[in-house]
Length: 227
Ligand code: CA
Image (tube, rainbow, N blue to C red; front, side, top):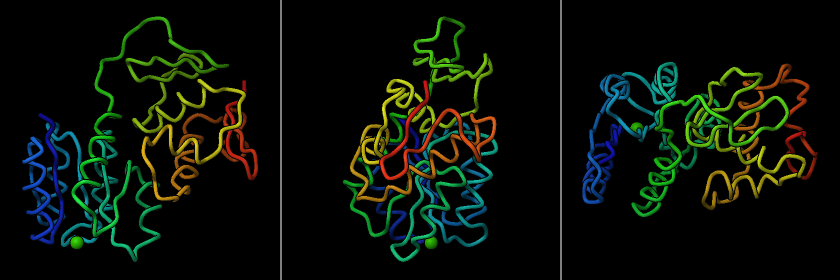
């Protein structure tokens, strides 16, 4: 049973979310402030974190950064509607997703399921790669991408993104299609998440992220993995 940590100082929201998630058969932990949230977020038994931004003690961004130094556990940021810039910032520092308050439980559980599915779980294995594009080798089950034989340190989302790009190497893919295929659900049109994810991915795999050679931009169309 996946264990979900809810970090939210608004007790009513936290308790409603916790109640509904336990009805969906998740184990739920709740933290009502930033310090407690950060401590619990670093526990290895947590499978996914729902993380509010504005928290007493330590804000959600700081918690997200600290967690990312140690683990790739899926993080969904809970942002207020007016905090538009927060969404992109959250993704920049390593959150996997965000959901805007107020949200429905149905929407939230759909996001949780999608993000848990993406989480990598299997051990690395030494075997033939499933796909090779240029310098990149991809191992589907192990969720590993190697460049020149060296494994890249990728989040689950970044893995899905590079895998999809490589499976379609040479074809220009629109941001809309990437959003649909990689994120796996309708994103209400906020395609900047794709650009942010591509930028982060380039920082990890390009020799010079400022002039990419592998993931190329086709201005006004989308992105293409060079062959
Ligand atoms: Ca709050």
